[in-house]
Image (cartoon, rainbow over all chains, first blue to last red; front, side, top):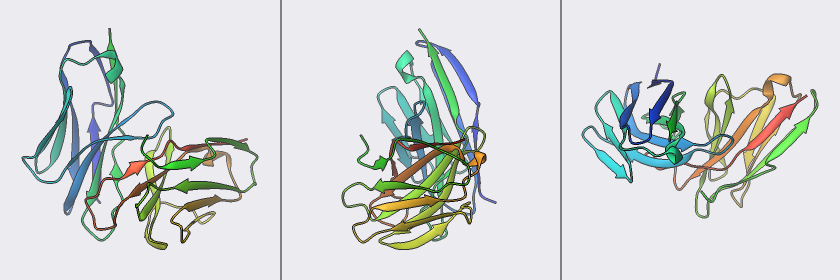
Length: 111
Length: 114
């Protein structure tokens, strides 16, 4: 069964303390891997799409990377406003464009 | 603002009742998706429509149904509601159904069943 696992479940950082979030997946075929940010009570906000191993995307303090079995979301010098739940989702090959989501990493950045 | 519009934002209803959630996709998007998010389950895919036709089905209960209309807006109908149906229901849309396309989410409809 295709699965998406995120770790850690929760992460507390001090402002300026860089770290990485992990998303691993077991799939029969990957069509795309997506990162979203979700604030409490809000809809997921699109961050990045990665399609092939070796690909990297950057946006402000965030950088997403992809290997054959996992993706990392690197957060450099985070600020309190980066506090949110970060969701990883995978689109598998097989005829549907639905996304399968991991359970997310709740990031808290303390000032 | 993702461009996906959902109504209502909040609703409270009693067990056994029926509700309808409405979604307007982003301009030009042909695919609409419905997801359910509860505290313990995370985001669960319910159903996808593409240009009016059902394209994929996920963990959608038989008490739930959806449709996409010719103007591409979609409705999710939830009937015989139970306490466990309380959740955030998200609609999302993407441009085409060809795969690998970014899916944009609305702000959700928060359903509370009492």
